[in-house]
Length: 446
Figure 1 (cartoon, rainbow, N blue to C red):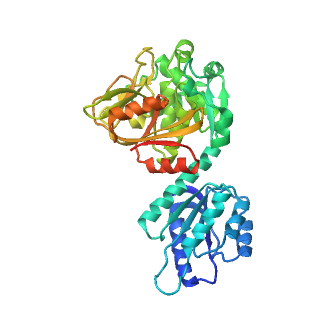
Figure 2: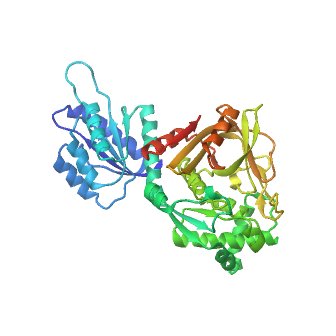
Figure 3: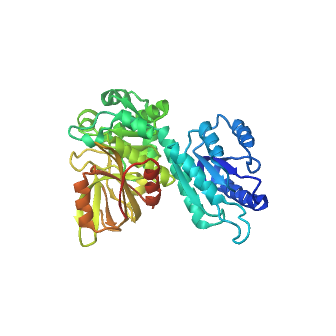
């Protein structure tokens, strides 16, 4: 079941075959109730403007991720115009097949959908179109994808990202244009001073931060709970969790170096790893768009933990590349042969960090990027290989679905940011649709 709130509007006119229309409506309604946790719908097909207004008044004040506007039969654009005035939610326009060919045109649903799409386009309202009957597998998959995309768009409009410290010098790609972020995606930034966070984290009561260590011990191999860097992790992690809850933060972008090493005396990697493991997406080097990229993948993959890494190595023989980072990675991403192992930062030699190779499996690689012309999306697919850990820290070797050297060259010429988000799921088609609905240029390597 998809966690989504759908306003389902079966629209028709009595001059068409209402018995055939009712069969479509009932089947559609039953399937939707099984698939979505919240469906607002009328008790029958809406056949007049007056009926539509009465139903809309009955659900006024509710929040909808999608308007599922089904042309059960043909209906003119007046219906769609009335819904446009009622809600700002994006539309999915659904036309169904004619029940028979030969003789009377019984539903004319396709023309109804065509008319509705024309109205939406002229009003510049984001929308998608689907075609088919409710019992068709392809139609069901397409509908669920559209609902998922529109739920994501709504979630982004509610997202606040905690930015804990400015990005390191020269990491320009980690920054974001706040007004563009808010206007185009609805995402807001909430900034917290890193040095204040360090100072106040040391005041967290021991009985509270001990719980963070206990949580880590459930999945991390070789953790020494009395080690000073582990204590510092637990204090800072608990402090950040309090900040997240108090300010309704959905993801964080954290400045990790050099400050964590020079001031706190510990690595940030473990805090980021555990936050991501428990469902709060956390990026290092204060990479704001990296945190959003992780958040998008997490939402579309129904809770799978994503990974954020640099592209550091090319293997032409296996048509693969290696993504790596210093020691951040959700515990559940570790290869089953080793588990999530505690380690030290490969350059700074301070703990506690993650030190493991990621598990094998199919992946989607993604980045929400920013250019002088606005946002763009990068979408790639690959297969995480079952190979020994490539480098200390956390890393994964991924065989690409496109030629590795030409893909690499294209990524560099396009000037994509060096942090790539990865999730163990195939959400490429859904990401393409996400970009289309938001009118964001998309570069695809699949």
